[in-house]
Each structure stands twice: as C-alpha cells, then as structure tokens.
Amino acid sequence: MSSKRAKKKKQKQLSEKQLDTEILSVEQAQDAEDIPSPQTVEETAVIEELPEKEDAEVQNDESSQEPEVAENEEFEEITQTVTQELPEDEQVVFEQKEKEEFAVMMQGFKDAVEQMNVKDPDEETLIRLFGECDTDSHKEKVIENPYEIVEKEDRHISHLVLKILYAASALLFTGVLFVFGAISFFDEDKLVSQTENRTLTQKPALTFSALFSGEYTVEYENYYSDNFPARDFFIGINGKIKDVLTRFSAGENTDVIISVDKTDDDFAGEGVDLGNQPENSDEIKENTAEVTPDNEASIKGSIIVSGNRAMEIYTYNESDAKRYASVVNKTAAAMPEGVKFYSLVAPTAVEFYGTKTYREGIHSQRDAIKNIYSKLGDNVITVDAYSALVEKSEEYIYFRTDHHWTARGAYYAYTAFCNTAGVTAPDIESFVTHKIEDFVGSLYRSSQAEALKKDPDYVECFELLTDATNTVYTTPEMTDGIDTYIVAKKVNADNKYLAFISGDQPLEKITTDVANGKKILVLKESFGNAFVPFLCNNYEEVYVVDPRKMDMYLPDFVKENGIQEVLAINYCFGISNSRYCNELEKLTVKEVKE
Image (tube, rainbow, N blue to C red; front, top):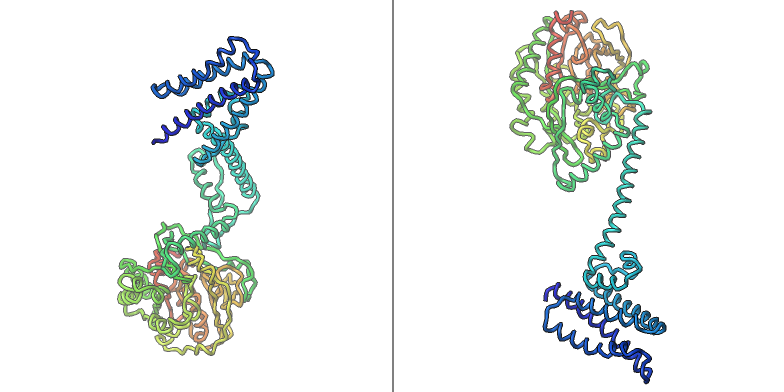
C-alpha cells in the first residue's frame, strides 16, 4: 500500500472514530437519566436519527468514492445542531468532552508523526499557527496535511537562524575591516621583507593623472598587498596550512616540488648596511640587511623539499653557458700582462643530496661545470672544486634551509684552489670554530615549508689564523672606507650568512699580517662570501668586488694596486644570471666607466 493511500485511510479512521465518540456521548447522557429527556420532539428526533445516519454513512463510504471532506462537513453540521439545541449545562459538558476528544486526536497525531521521525507540533504550536478560534479548522488542517505544519515550523526556525547568522557575519566582516583599516592608517611601512628576502612596494604618490588613468589604483593595491597588517603572521599561517596539506597528500617521506617566482637576483645581492655598524665590529647588532632591487623580468624556478632539506633544481642551458664563458674569457683577456686568472664554478646541494632524477642529464652539475670549463680559453685556469666537495658530501657542507654552502663546504673548495694555485691550505683541525644558531635561510623564505622552520641550520664560523682588517669602499679610488669584520661572532639579523665579510658589498680590501707581498682580487656573488676569509692565510692583500654593486674599469684597478691574481667564483645558478654576466662584462668596458 502506498504512503498516500495509507495516509487517507488513517484520516478516514480518525474521522469515523470522532463521529462515533460524539454519538456515544449523547446516548450515554440519555441512558443515565432513565427518564424521558426534557428535550423537544425535534431534538429527540434528531438524536434518534443519528445511529441510522451513521449506518447510512458507513454503507455510503463502502459503496462510493466520496471524499473524506464530505464526512467532516456532515459531522460538523450534526455537532453544531446538537450543541445549539442542548441546554446550557449540558452544552458545557459537551464542549468539555469535545476538548478532551480533540486532545485524544492530537495525541494520536503526535504518535503518528513521531513514528515518521518528524518533529511533532504540539497544541500550542497549532494555536500559534492557526489562532485560538475555530477548533474544527485545526482538526481539518491536521487531518488533511500534517506535514504542512511541520514544514511551516521548520521554515520559521530556519529563517530566524539565518537572520542571526547574516547579522553576525556582517558585524564580523565590518569589524575586521575597521580594525585592519585603523592599523594600516597608524602603522609604519616596512622597506624590506625579511621573510621573503625582497624589497616591498612603497606607497604611491597621489596625482590627478595617476588617479584618473587608473595607475594609482593598481599601484596602491600592490602597495597594500605588501604592507597588509600582520602580513608576516599570515604568511606563516599559510605556510603551516600548506605544509599540513602537502604532507597529508604526499606523505612524510615524499619529495615535494614547489614552484616559485624567481628573479635573476634572488638569493644574492644581500649585504649589511654599514652606515649602521660601528667600525671594526665583529658583531651585527641590528637587522640591517637590505636587498638589491632587480628590474629584470622574473623567470620560473623550482625548489624540491625532501624531508628537512630544500634544494634548488638545476637545469643546464647551453646558451647561458656560452654567455658566461664568453664574459669570463673577455675579462681574463683584459687583465694586465702576467696576471693569473682563475675560474671556480661551485655546485649546489641538489648535486649531492637530490634524487638521481635531479643529478643526471640536463640536471647534472658535474657535466655542466665540465662543459663550461671546456669553453674557457687557455688564459683561464680552472679550479675543480667539485671533486673536493663530493668526497666530503657526508659532512655539513651545505645548508638545508639556504641555497649557499657552509663555511666548511667553502673550506674544501678553498683547498682545491690552493692545490691549483700552488699554495698551502691550513689543516681544518687547526681552526678555532664557533656556531651561530637558528639560521633559517633563503630556501625557507621562498618555499615557506614548515619542515625547514622546525629544523633550522646553524652557521659554522672558522676564526682567522692571522691578524687582518677589512674595509669597504664604494668607489675604485678607495677614499670613502668603512671598517668592517671578516668573520662575525654574532648575527642578530635573520640572514645569518651575513656573518662573512658583511655580505655583498661593492668593494672590500682585506689586509693581513702574512707579509708575503701577494695580492689577489676575487670577483664573486654571494657564494664567494664564505670562501674569501680563508684566503687571508695565503695573501697579504685580498680585494673583493661584487660586479652588481661596483662601477669601475677593472684592468686599471688591477694594475694600479699591483694585483697578481684574479679569481672568478660563481655557483652554477650564477652562470645563468643574466644580470651578473652583464655587470661583470661592464667591468672591462673602459669607455662606459669614464
């Protein structure tokens, strides 16, 4: 039997039960008297006709398909006639019984609704929905469509809950906007993001032309994106969420590839602002690191995160290799006669700790270095740092959270240089070392991988075996010198790699007590910073030039200062850095410098 037919049958039975109850109550009232009722003949006739009418209605129901509504209407006519003709005291009794019968009917309705696992409306709900008058209308609506009552009640509650939620959401949203707007108005903008290692967009100037052209809106959007209140906090939260999702989907022991927007000058060009440092200081007392801006178009790069280590994925490019080799050859050829010119290309961590996929074919840095060296002229002496490093790959020679090698890794590359240059490198055990803890470097800033932050690096520093001083200059005339350190004892800046020669500076001159008359100039990017201090063991003077920051004609500078050797040291990613190659080439173009 379908649910619709069952529902109609139940309604029919309920209607019949109501009719029987009404008639029975009237008969019982007459029998209890045992005397003729004082009713009129018309009243008695009506009462005596009730059983016959009931039988007729039952028979009519079985033989016809009249709707149940007709029965209800007929029942209402009878009960209304009865209640109108009864004496006042009996009418009160009749109404009381009618209420009791309605309560019985409601209980039956509740039981039925409960069996259907639907919210059961109580009498109070029905009265609220339909009003306190017209009880029969209550009955009819309950019998005809009990679900309508439940649906109306649910809709009423749902609408109320939604209104509350909408109001709360609106208040929360406007409240957040107000709070962040107030903070943005009063807080001080940052110039550099230590978290991302880049210069932040500054507030644009408001002009009519910029405003009406739409340029001001775009620039202000970029500015606010870089200076949003608590931006570093939200970046950290995003890193945690990304790390959880990545580990959940990929597993704890699975390598994760992260694509990053990388410019030619990322991970390089960072140096201490010596205007805030005391002379001859071996401690960086403030977070004064600055990032050299780069206006070139960005290129895509990728970082692989394997457990607690991150590495840049290297890919060899033949045109980049030819370009770098051409610039090195040109620089070597421009040197004064008798000057020895060395080239050292350093591999990166992925060559030793990456999976086989990232160490073979176009990703092989061993093959890349060989190809580059094969393109250099006979006047360039190559240094095989790769072989020295691969033998020590089980030691702490590369950072896990930063793209640089450690000072220990730089030391082993220095020993390879000494073997090539014919000088002696002190034994590593002869150095006194100290550590600078809690270093989370450039690869964390780019990837925001939480695993790196949880397991930071430390910077191992090899203290000098000789007495030496270091001075930084901004011009080749060296008249504006500021004294600085060679190896720091402590670094309070986020970038602990600034512990070596104050990071990337235009021109530095280190004078030692070796007193052998030997002078060397190092052309480098940031990979050379940890390498330079070891040269203090073999040379009386060490000059350091960062081509990205220095404007000079190199051949004249080498000749005027009596420099006998020049070392160009770059890591594998440096050879594909177009900006570095362009700046290095400019050092040999005299007419541009004058």
